Image (cartoon, rainbow, N blue to C red):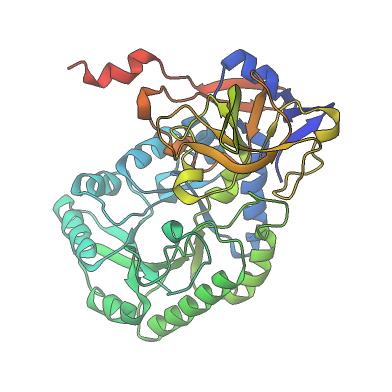
Length: 427
C-alpha cells in the first residue's frame, strides 16, 4: 500500500499534486510520502507485536536524516553497515541501544566508534572479525556484544546480486560449522557472543524461504542452548519484498508474520528484525521530464532528464519500475499499477536517460501512453536503493529529495550544484 494515487486525472502524493512538486523543485527529483513510510513500519510492528521484536530500519535503503528522525520518533532502531551510517543514525536521534552493526568489512576505527557509542550489537561475519572486535573492546576496557551471522543455505529466489543466504556468499558462517564457531568463542573476555543473525537476501517475495531458514536456525539455537550457550536473541534480518510489478507480486508482511510467529513464539530469546525495502520501497517515486523523442531502427526512444546515475537499479539488477505519465489522457488513468497494464493508443518504447552509456535506461520495450517533450513521468517504487545508490557519474549533480506530509511538502535534501561537484577537490 502507498499514498501515491491518481485523482482528477493526475498523480498525487498524499494530498499534493506531483506536477506542483516538479514545478517548484525541478526534475529529476525524488519524492517521498511520510504516511507510506509510517504505514509500512507500523504494519511490521503490529504484525509481529506478539513477539515484541526490536525493529531496526536498514538505513542503507534510504537514509535521509529527516526520514530516519521520524522513524526514530516512532521507536524504530537502525541497522547500519558503515561508520557513516552509524553517524547518520545517531544524528537522527537513534537510540544506540537499538542499533545493530552489520557488514563483513568493519574497520578498526568503525568498530571502536560503535563500541564507544554503546550500540546494541555487532553482527559477526567471520572468525577473524570476532577476534578483532574482542581485541578492540579489550583495548577500550569495554565489553562488546555480538550475534554470529549464519548462512542457512536457503535459496531466497531473488536476484543473484542480492541473494545472501547461500554458502557461496561473502556473508556469515556456514550453518554446518556454526556450532564449532560458537564453541570456539564461548569464553571471550571482551566480546559477549549472545545472538544468532541471518539475512537471506532481498527482495524475497515468497514466504517459504523464510520458513525454511527460520526452521533451520531455531533448531540450531535449540542445540546451542542445550550445550550451555546463552542465546539472548535471534536477528531474523529483513528482505521482505514489495510490489514493483503489480499488486500481488510480493506477500504482505502480515502473511509472513502468520507463518513465522508459530515457529518463534514461546522461545527463550528475543527477536530482532531489519526491514528496509518493505518500509521504504513504495514510499518514494522519481519524477522526470521528457526531453526528446527519437527513433533508431525499429526502436522508439523516450529520452528523459533522469539517468542511471539517479536510478541504477534497472541496469544493475534488471529491475522493473512501473513508469507512467503524471497527467495521462482520460483513457489512460491507471486503476492500479501493473506490468500487465496496456495503454490505449500507446506505443512500445525504451525510456532512456542522458548518460553516455548504452546501459543508461529506466525501462526497455515498455508499453506507454504517447508522450511528448515536457511531459512529466513518475517512476514508482523508487524509495529503496534509489537515491541511496545515486552518483555524480557524467558530473551530474544529484537530485533533490522531497518529503510530503499530508498537504504540505518540503525539500529534505537540496539539489546539488556545480560547485558541489568540485568542492572536495578544492584542496
